[in-house]
Image (tube, rainbow, N blue to C red):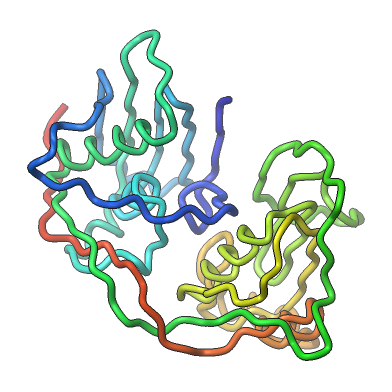
Length: 279
């Protein structure tokens, strides 16, 4: 199935949590690779767009850090080290697998990792560090969200502005803007990942909630708070003066609580990286 993704905060509207892919030991055999790869600088300042399926990958105006997020299934705050240009410089990247190949998700990830190794000379390793995290728990009187017992067939997972006049999107869809989230039949681990992306720290799920949920959340974003289209501006932060903060909204509207804590987190540490080689 083809996936057409718009990069908003994470690479793809990644609402389902995926464990970080372990970095291959350099002594291992070379992983599978795209048959054809093109990497070109992009100085347009245009939007970031990604289209991918197991046989091909195309990204416009993407950074190296975002490529790493896609290849290793992690968030930006789990990438440590490296020069500043891995986040500021943008590229158009295309990769095409050998004709007729039907790559699995795992082998496709390995192809992206190989692309980073070959064209950007990326070398990295994983470290487990004790970092600041948030723990998500249920308030004493219980959650205000309930799992849907007979979920409908998902339509798609989207990330787009909330449509005026609509209540909930179709099953399997997510609509989010800064300060607004409406999700229909969203896996709870996906909501946890959404929170993690927004607060820019790992969120450890201590709720015990499982399954899919209809979730509506409205809050007033703090200036600089990460949203689907980048950090909130002062204007966005002032747009909803009567709404509570994200932390208060999660507690009052969902019956859940985000609390600061310390916990072990796998971090991808960059040993070396270089500007891409010519095509």
